[in-house]
Image 1: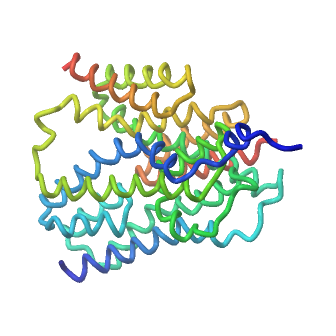
Image 2 (image 1 turned 180 degrees about the horizontal axis):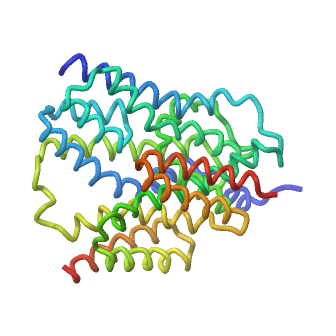
Length: 236
Length: 107
């Protein structure tokens, strides 16, 4: 049977531009945080070029703020590097989970490039889109990841250039932008909510709270992700 | 730019790339449907998103609760704006805007 042009278009996987468009909440969430990082980095004694270099090369929010503390405290290079590395181990789960959700569309030819952009938020947005029935494409991943990366690096550069106090005159705007990533995670959670996912969600939430209160924020995140995934795996 | 800063950033960045790209590139085959690996990976997404949401709001609740009204209003508006069209963009932007307005009104 010949497929109608309309149906064929509707079934086309989204491309690069679609990824750029769907990155809007991530861009709006990343920019103020990266801006804050640029401000904090210059306050810690780094130049604008050094702050932007950290965002360009490390590209991981929380660990970059930790990097500032380590650098200013004079921690040895290897100790600092391995501390930062330990904070991001959770990312090893994202690619395989995304490929599993992508099913037969899960192409990986250019994964060496687009997977660099597979941050928490990009992973969540891509997974949410697949859960809503969207098809996977590497072009979409490039668009989503590139917009987020550019927002992160440019936000850092602008923050370093502007210095402290740029958003302090706009406390409500600053607060709203600060809530953007929480709102994004909430909306993503709603988009993937199902009876099957409930045990993983409930256990992840409880383990995150327990791990954070008992040990640290990083431990809470690892406990939540692994505990939730194990709870989902145990469910038949 | 100091050599130590460059070395730390390059080591951490290389590890981040490896964590994000290598597991995807080195997957040889799809996990067996219904198998333990497939169920673990299927649950990873919901677990990760739930974890990141809780981790992002927890500092506002503990140890000293702050800005609870904006948090409640922002979260409620995110849910309300998401449902009609199941739009993540609409939910996120409306939630953040409502948070800002509630922060300003309560401030």
